[in-house]
Amino acid sequence: MTDIMIVEDEAAIRQVIAMHLQLVGHGVREAEDAANARSLIAEKKPDLALLDIMLPGEDGFSLGEYLIGRDVPVLFLTAKTAVTDRVRGLSMGAQDYILKPFEPAELLARVENILRRTRKEDTTLICGGLMIDFAARRVMRSGEEIPLTTLEFDLLAMLARRRNVAMSREELLAGVWGYDYAGETRTVDVHVQRLRGKIGAQHIETVYKYGYRFNGHPEGNT
Ligand code: CA
Image 1 (cartoon, rainbow, N blue to C red):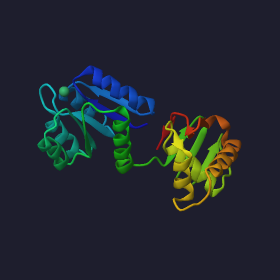
Image 2 (cartoon, helix red, strand yellow):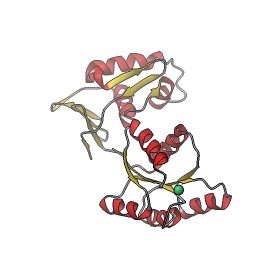
Image 3 (cartoon, rainbow, N blue to C red):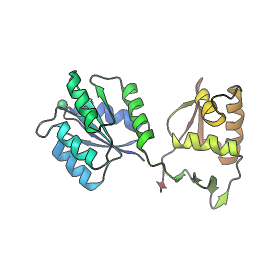
């Protein structure tokens, strides 16, 4: 599970951010100031830090430098509209910034972008009794391999890597079959049905009038 640290002194904002990140399956740790953040970092380096700039005591820029120096991706949350602050954050090496107030959907999109760019992808995922080995392209249940076609594996891998996030039929078609594939979204439905038949229908849920979602929280990954 992705470990995202939120450093923000306003509890209401922190909680809203935490709730939205958790809804899409991310792990969240919260700090209300830099001192707290530093003790969280000492326990474990987060995969991403969302950092408010105006903090009591040590400010977000100072903490940001410390994090960036330790290869932790940083997204600045800033109420400041001054161009100099935005430029300062980016020139320090922050991945991105977002101006407050922001829409949760925009924040989530920026977070996913950063994670996609920076994440060391899991090589295996164990979820609901299913073990997916992305590198070996094998799927096992109770020690037995489930034989999948190339397309079925690609479809499962794409859904499982973005687990707990709804993916549209168009996204799946483009990602698995390729952007130049002239097929219909019905193709996705047919292959999802076959995949469910092999791995168990409970893993892939239909998202009404949209697409599909792989459900589950990893029991462990390497
Ligand atoms: Ca603040």
